[in-house]
Picture (tube, rainbow over the protein chains, first blue to last red):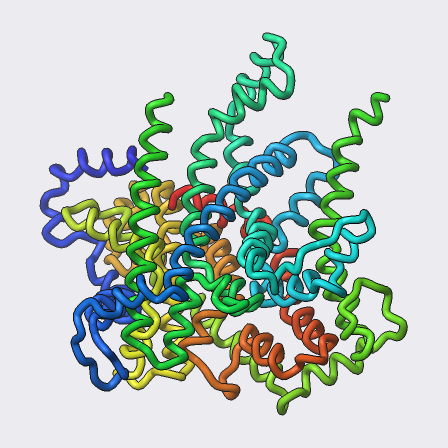
Length: 304
Length: 275
C-alpha cells in the first residue's frame, strides 16, 4: 500500500490537468457519507450531549456531569465498569495464549489438519445467543455435563453461573471458546508467512522444536500477536451478547459489564444515563485500543 | 514408535477437539430431538425416544409461526444489507485508495473510528425516530450498513491497492467516465473480495443480536436471533424446543461455512491484520 501511494504522488504533477476533474469523483462518497453520518457519526456526537442530560427522547434537561457521577459512585454501575476490564483482560490473555498454541499446532504438518482447523473455527460463526444458551445448560451446577464430568474424576465443580465469584469468569471462558478460532487463524497466517529458510537454518544449527518456537516463531509471528491482542481487547470491552444470554449480568450485578449496564438503563428508561454509559465505553475502548496499538506496533518496528 | 511420534500429537489433538468443540454441538442436536421431559434433565445422554419431527413442527409453529417470519425477516435484512454494503464500500474504498489528497487522513480516521467506537444506542434510536424509521426494517438495514461499513472498506482497499492503476488510465483514455470506469472496469475485477465480503457480512448480520434488539423490537419483526431470546423466556421448561430453534438457526451459517470456509477464514484474518 505504501508503494502505491508513493507512485501516485510522483505521478500527480504530470496529470495536473486531470486533478481539476479527477476520475475518482468525490461524489462516490455521497451516499455512504449520508448513511454513515446519520446512523453512526451523528448518534456518536449526540451521545456526548445527551449524556449530560436527563432525557426522555422527547425532551432533555441539562444536568451537567450528574450521570457520570452516578456511573462512578453507584456500586452496581461501578462494578460493571470494573468487570468490563477484568473480562477484557481474561479473554485477551487466554485468546493470545491458546490462539498461539492452536496456531502453531495447525500450521505444522499435523495429522487431520483440515478437520481440526474447521472444528476450531466453526464456533466463531455460530450465533452468540445460541452458544450462550447451550453453555448455560452445560454449566448447570447439578445436572450440567461439565459438572457431571468433573464429578466423575472426583472434582466438585463450582456453581458456574450462579456463584457471584464465578459468573463473570464462566462467561469469559465461553467467550474464549467461541472466539479462539479467529485468533488461531490470524496466528496461522502469521506463522505460514515466515520464510521456510529460517526453519531450515534452525534445523541445521541443531535447534529442537522448543528452540524453534521460542527463537523463531515467537518473534517472527509478533505482528499476528499484536493483531490478536488488539482485536480481542476491543471485542472484550464491547462484549454484550454472551453476557446477556448467559447471566443477564447476574447474579445481582456480579457479571454486569458496561454494555449490559447500557441496556439495563435503556430498558429502565434512563436514556441520559444509558448514553453516559455509551460515552464511558467509547472513551474506554479508544483510550485503551489506540495507545496499545501504537505501543505494540512501535516495539515491533524496533525489532527489525 | 515412529508411528506414535507421527500420529501421536494428531490423535491427541483430535480427542481434545472432540471433547472441547464437538461435544457441545452434539449436545445441541441430542437435546433438540429429546422429549420435553428428558430434555429438561439437561444431561448429556442418548434420547430414550426420538421427537425430531414433533419438536420441529412445534418449534416452527410456536407463537403463530414466529420462527418462519423471523427467517424471512433475517433473510431480507442480511440480503439487502449486504447488497448495499458491497456497492457502497467498494465505491468508498476505490476513491479512498486511488485519490490521495489532504482528505485522505481524515477519511482514514473516520474508517478507523467505525471499527473501534461502539454505536451509541439511544441516540441512534433518537435519530431513527426523527426520520420515522424506528422499528422498521429499512431503519435497521441502514444502521447495520453504517456499522459494518468500516470493516468492508478495509477489505476492499487492501484488494484495490493490488489492481494496477494503468488499467484505469487505459479506460480513461478510451473515454470512460468515472461511473463507467468503476462499474464496468474495476468492480468486476473485485470479484474475489466481493465474495469474501458477501460471505463474512451475511454471517455477521444474520448473527447480529444487538441491532435487532434495540432498533427492531416487537414480535412482529423479530429476527432469528431475537426468537432465540424470546423463546428462552417462553420455553423455560421446553428445552427441547429451545435447542431445536438453536439447531435451525445454526444451519444457515453451517451451509455457508461448508461452501465458503476459505473465503470466511481469509476475510477474517486479512481484514483483521489490516485493521
